[in-house]
Image (tube, rainbow, N blue to C red; front, side, top):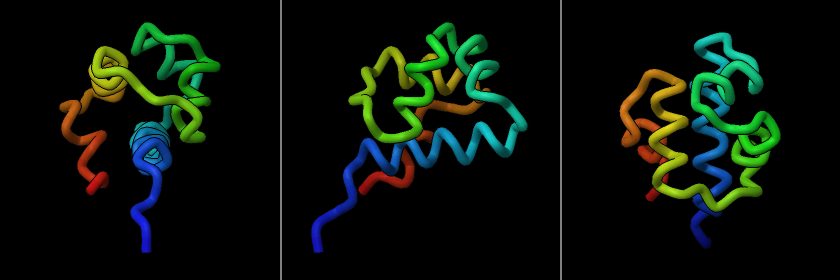
Length: 73
């Protein structure tokens, strides 16, 4: 059985952490200095996220970047 797409796993992780912190996509985008539409695309697994944006999202969620990629094998 093939591994799930890492973009999907990453997006699910971002969404889970965002919701746990009771942040809207718009608020996370503001905290991460990213566009709201970009955050939505990340959460849906539509974006191949760059390292810089992984770090920005991690800062917006107040976690280490490794926390976002933990579920990816």
